[in-house]
Image (cartoon, rainbow, N blue to C red; front, side, top):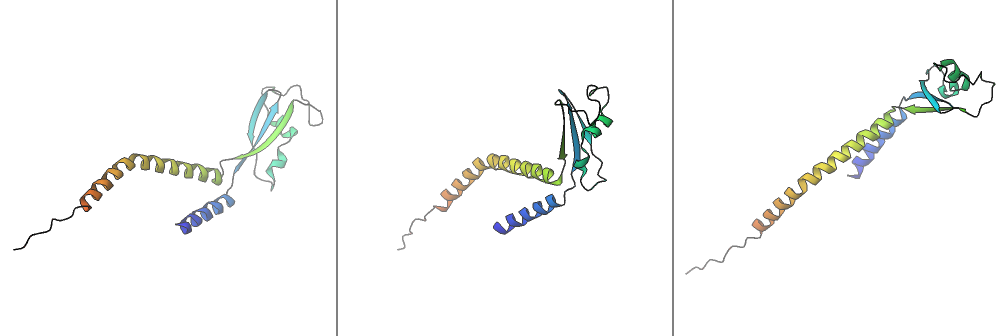
Length: 133
């Protein structure tokens, strides 16, 4: 059993190492925020998640008070994050499998215990000694 668990763990680790997540840049302008998908052309796409990137991509005058990259502002922040990686999908898939397995075992357990008890009673039969004359 331990061999199977180690094999499964190795599979998930290899899948997470081969993951190609989608990277996003979240731009905060005051209380507003907008999320943009980062282009994957650079080896380090999160380096593109800058104030100027946000200013170039934000619409509707959300950041009107912030003039350019050199303008200091405490109300402006950026955050780079990844989503939809194979590792995330593997964790969710494993969680769903375990949850369904536990629900099935909870549903089957009372029937299995009743069947096991009936089987034990049948196996406890001791024949009566025959009286030969």
